[in-house]
Length: 89
Image (cartoon, rainbow, N blue to C red; front, side, top):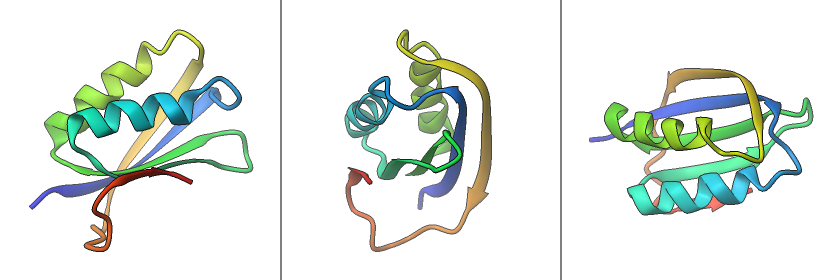
């Protein structure tokens, strides 16, 4: 059973294609969940996956050349059995 992680990306992460980049990489890694912009300028990712696969996604995200990530927060959260794909919200 995969765990669920709520990830917040802070910095210059909106308006640079970050959601599409996260979506594409999450789909390749078989992660379920979503990515969305928040009103405070950050990007939120809900990723249901293993810790190892989450780390692979975050490594890709950290090296996305169009964004300047200043901080990443990760916390474990409750899984949602209704999620069976990865979406952009």
